[in-house]
Amino acid sequence: MFNKALCHAVRGKKEIVVISPHCNSPDSSVLAGGIGTHVYEIYSSLPESLKPAILLLTCKSSDRPPGIDTVYIPLVNLPFFYLISFHITALGYLLIRNRGLKAGAVHVHYMEMALLPALLTLLLGINIVVTFHGYLDYNKYPVFMRPVMRLTWKVLEYCRAGVVVLSGDSYTYHKKLCSTENVRLDVVGNGFIGRQVVEKIRETKRDHKQDSRVIIFTGRLSPEKNVKELINAFIKLEDPEYELWIVGDGPERARLESQAGGSEGGGKIKFWGWQPRSEVYRLLSEADIYVLPSIFEGVPIALLEAYSFGLKCVCVRNPFTETIPNITLLASAGWQEIKSKIVTAAESEAEPDMDFVSQMSWGNAAKCLEKVYQKIM
Image 1 (cartoon, rainbow, N blue to C red):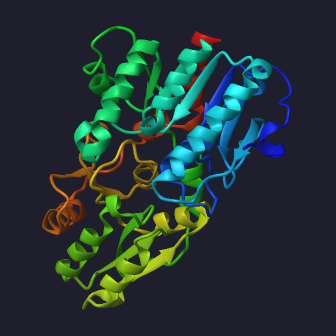
Image 2: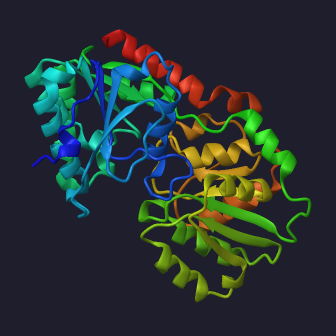
């Protein structure tokens, strides 16, 4: 089952084994989404003194955070078995290597896959930490998944697990789910590019201004991002002053391009495809309004990046986005609402709160994670 790469000896005692299928640097062309970026950035930002105590188990297409020992695990490239195959293989590696690793805790990203690691840590007698990258809303899962998620939460309570959430609002939300004091909740937020980086890019952006005003979306082109309704809203806007830029790639791209190409407003819709992070930042610096029309989100990094560039932001409403100063929230995911809120944002004089921007950095997030680990090491 395990090849030589999986069974190689890891030097030194590892206090924390991190299990995350995705770990991708900002300029990676692998479409891993916000969780992959979170894992790469936060472990890259940890103090050098802590890094030798960590082993990351991740998939073979991931990047290696500087200073973090990493084992790459192959995946079964089938939609449903993709994450399951990774976790089963990662758990097998952990079980076989446990004596040599002497792990004090296992930290799992992707709450949908937390059940098996939680059961294994019971067997091994070690701690488990799970990062919830969204809100544990049972109704958002397919019907067949809801009993599994309820069981997962019960097992985490039984394990006296550490649960990491991404915002104070998520903390309040999940605290209400706890029937006992067994689950230890901590907040380790998403970060995004720092204020100094933003200001530097703003200073060096192109001298000429776009002839049109630009509405922009950045992110993975997948069904839950609801970009099709953004395109519908743009077409119905019928305002020649605007262009729509769609930056990103994913399984929905061909369908979205066909939708845009068959519309009267198609000439004003530009698909940029995947772009390196530096180019995404340049495009953001030239845009006017950012729209994130997702059906659901957790703490979206793409939104935070756009906000930090001073764009007027229209986005999905959830407990986290409700705390962001001076943004326009969607009441629903339909094109009529998206169109209405684009007009509202365009007419608004509100500016992003740069104090809020300064607080949310990867360095601050890493300090919070370090405190979580200090409790269990």
